[in-house]
View (cartoon, rainbow, N blue to C red):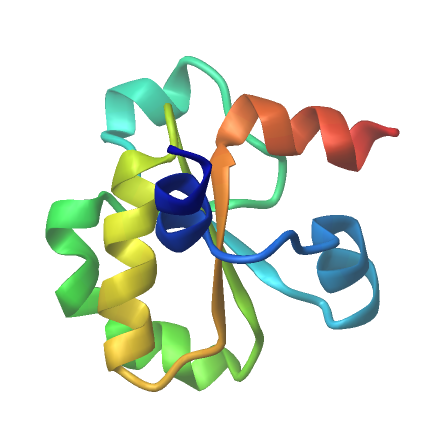
Length: 104
């Protein structure tokens, strides 16, 4: 089971370092309603089903991307889509967990 989780989410990444040193952008791929109920300040809300239409805009930012959602599943899907487009992207998992890490 651990191997499956590592394959799904990738190796451990220091997200704080990505955000602070590499000026990574955080993309929350939940629905607008979910996003309005709570989010990481400064993150962008691009629902996973509309992500393909935002790839050009995201590429133009020329920054690493961290995807987040409610549980980590949609952010894993988003990571795959963005990687296929040639972006440097990391799955940050649940937005609330990443928020706690960034607040430390």
